Image (cartoon, rainbow, N blue to C red; front, side, top):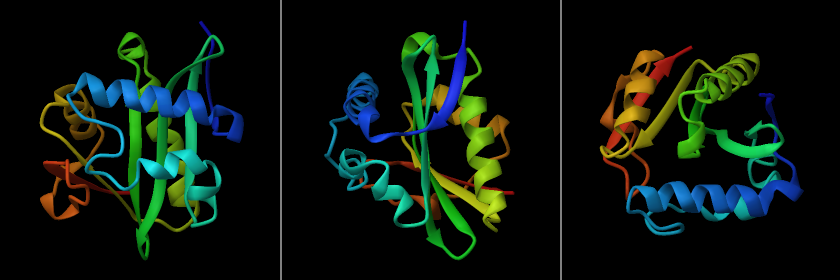
Length: 154
C-alpha cells in the first residue's frame, strides 16, 4: 500500500468536494449548510494559499483518501480545517500523517497554536485530536454546525 500526502492541486477539486460531501453525509450533515468554509473547497488551492493557508490531500494507492487544511485566523493561530478521511481508510495512520504535515507547515510559518471545531458525533476524530495534544476549548467554535472546539499549542 502506497500512502502519499501532498498539496492539493486544482485537478483534485472534484474528488475533494465529493469526499467531503460523503463524510459530512455520514454524520447527517450537508455540504454548504452551516459552514461557509465548504464553498472555499471549490476554489482550491487558491482559496487557502492566497490567504496564507495550505491544503493537502492523502492518497492510498493513487486514490484520494483524506483531506486537511490550515488557515490563519489570528496572529500565530491557524485553524485546522476539513480534516476528513474516507471510512475505509480510517485506522491506516492517514490522519496522523496529515496532522504532522499541518503542524510542521504551521510551525515553520511562526504559528504557535492550532485550533479546530467539530461535532460530538465524530467520536473517533475527537479521540484522535485529544490523543494528539488538542484540549477542549469551546471558544474555538466557528462553524454553526459545530458543537466542540479544541486548541493545541505547538
